[in-house]
Image (tube, rainbow, N blue to C red):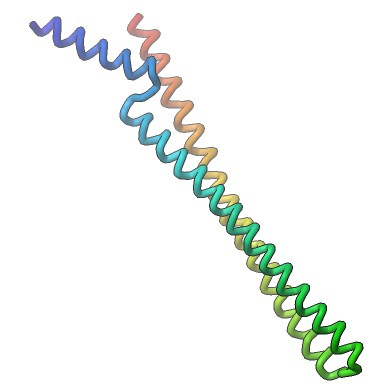
Length: 130
């Protein structure tokens, strides 16, 4: 009876190894999928932020142009200062977004490496049993 149980246990391990779905591997696959989704969300957020920033700066530039045509030098000066501040804020936001994206991409790479290591270990273990 012990031999049958052992054979069943080894068969189960081989089944997991062949399918690449051992419990630890599934967690890594799920984690990898979540990290990939995080990268996608970060990219979408960056794109939205960039579009918003571009529109805001464009609006200020148009206001500056209109103030110039009206001859309102004081208003032009104020709008230019505002544009400069907005632009600096947008640049800082873009840098922060890029850093966040790099961290997310690094997590994906690390998860892929770990998954490969585990698969390699399972294959090595399977070969040793054969």
